[in-house]
Length: 143
Image (cartoon, rainbow, N blue to C red; front, side):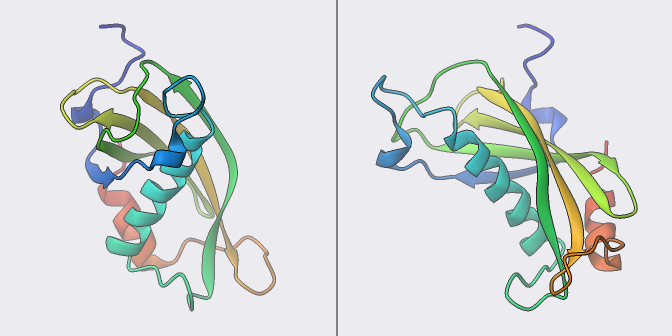
């Protein structure tokens, strides 16, 4: 297995991803742009469930400012997937997540990449420090 194809054990947080019929493209596999949605969903799932982020009312929110993805193997609906999430870099106002997508039975990623959140004041959209409870959760999955 190539070294650039991550394995599930490299990600301390794992969540299920449900594929949808509309995720497939005309070539019969999940379209490349859909993986960015999976990345965003996995990171936010972590923030909501582990960091206790209240998406509707929190005064601080995370905005995606960068993302990229490498593809390793095709998958298609209705394959159940898993997303592995870790923190590759934790700054004062930003976090870089490492995220990989796995099918339900394999331990080698079908795709992987990074997503960067900058935390901002909900109203002003000015960058602010990552709140304590979110930071503590992110520190738990830092590698």
